[in-house]
Length: 276
Ligand code: DGL
Image 1: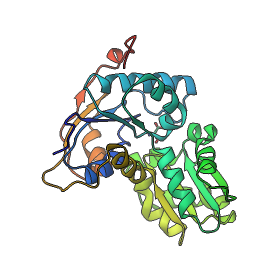
Image 2: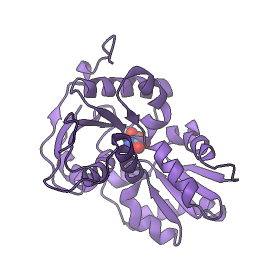
Image 3: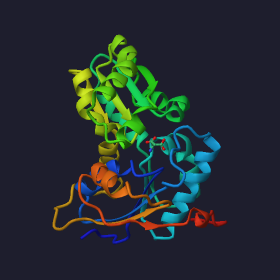
Image 4: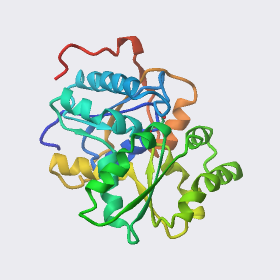
């Protein structure tokens, strides 16, 4: 059993963050997780930095009411725009998805050309490029970034490997192929589900799954190795809006069946004066 029995908090703009929780649950099956999907206000990817910071702070405050020992920001957009704010606001460790994936990309690239794809807000923030530079160890690394906003609705439509998705992916990725990338950071919760299409279009290119990298980082922060899968991890799901599509989509992102989520009224997501 974990030495600290408090749960790990995870939040995302919606259900996409379950692709990150999937890796956390795989490596830390003895932990308890509290997941909040802000499904009433998704997407964050085309909102202003100020709005994303406010929403993210409210999500973190909600998780703290569950006495979490750590917060994993599963959303790339929130990680890109709100991580500093969150870290200054709360006293538990806050893990984002960008730093771990940037470190992995900087280590894995052979030719120094790294592609990054994400939402418009994530790419506009330049967070990945700055973070990759920080992990370059003085080596010259070229980061080629491209927003791919159509991928999110395609995944949510369940078009994971359809001709239309291939066409869109070819269009988005053409410039990155021309740049000669050998590593591609999937900088959005939804993109790992497009693995089949991306692998077909980018043979030989290493795909970096930020959820997997963040889960490894969580192990480091908790100072533990992968846990024995003694039982299924306990997962408490909360959403700010509940639609019939939830169960099917959640299962797809998490890779296992899920219980019905508990709905939280978005009006109740407020920032208490002191959320430490
Ligand atoms: N979860 C978001 C991300 O990883 C994608 C969906 C959204 O735009 O909110 O950036």
